Image 1 (cartoon, rainbow, N blue to C red):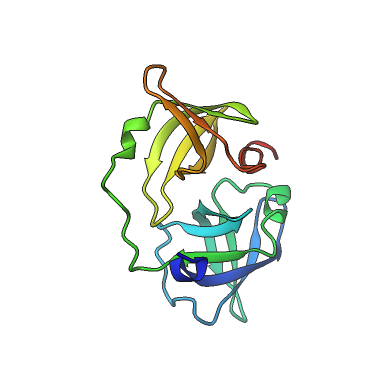
Image 2 (cartoon, helix red, strand yellow):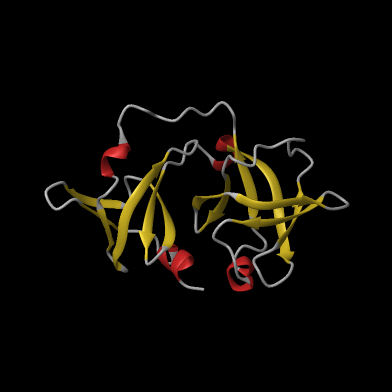
Length: 175
């Protein structure tokens, strides 16, 4: 399924605004009038739809909003998102519930490049983009559950070995 079929364009991240991760977003004409701030939004990073949550959402003038996203708390991290689109999932999407991925909570996560990432603390069942939340030195990393990223699963040692896209772990870990 193409990105356009999975998501609705919500807006474009124009620029940073301040030193604490604030962003100015220009809303798309098709953006819904109301959104649920408890639901994730998605930003395409290196071809992956990465989920984020709004921490702050303040309407401004001319179809612009000031937003702060959870886990984006520095100007440097916010700068990495400028120029990107914010997407909302189509309401018609239904997550595949045929396999319970909560089984992997507590497993260790490793990456081919980054080595040991941390421990899977939660399975997040986002619309068409389920993710594992991994705790790494008190920082949360969201890793899309994608069969192309999972190299192997060792149930005896409770370890999932990933081969994640370059920069995904660094995006969350490095400031």
